[in-house]
Length: 302
Image (cartoon, rainbow, N blue to C red; front, side, top):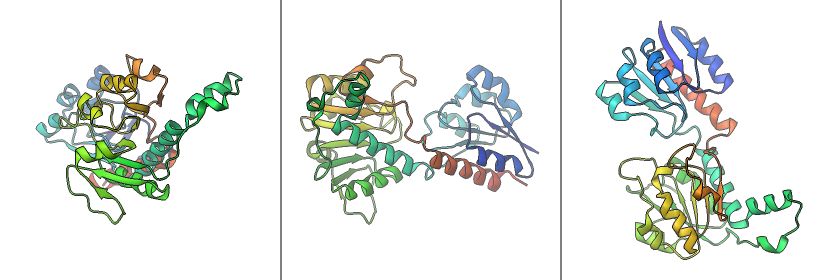
């Protein structure tokens, strides 16, 4: 009997199916910090996490029976991949499950940023009628720079075309797709885009990829969206760009530290902030949960 620890919540329907798989003993135990996880993990052959639980090197070193780590979602920056590799532990994720959820949230952030939805909402809740303060701009006919064009980036590009935008894409590899998009250089994307959105994993190569230097290459008054990973952006550089007016508005779903210690960026009047909810649509979470079930059924269920 293989033991599976579910350390972050899964969609209830997926969890029920997971419990029904033959040959698996499934335990749900959420909200553990590193020390509690270190005490718990030795008994288990597989662990399932989302973004909250951190599978650190210390946790992996304590995992005497662990064969498989599954991330119900896309990003793997909460898992020490090198430590897992060193111990021969397989790491899997569910990259397709929440692509639409994140792409739709990205457009929600984009619309809110260009049309001042956050400010207007707060104004109305203060019982004010400040209609003339909240004049915005359209997305139509604007150039959207998409940095990182994997599954989510391409879903964003599809929606940009429907909005009548001109999508430019930048990726470190040549992107093959049937969409009417143009793949351009880093410098051209930064200098030509009216809006820029990030869809990158956090790696050693992408950390602080959006720096003071990158902001200086952007158009004056650019609108900036990040619903990928916080560490890709130097938050101090973004705050400086907002203060100078280089960035007209920013919509941010992810942060260098979550939850943040420093709210200086979030408190800026031209920042719309959400608490890392890009993938938090019930449909996407259900797909992610059933993808976890599929992985365990293929690898561990008897």
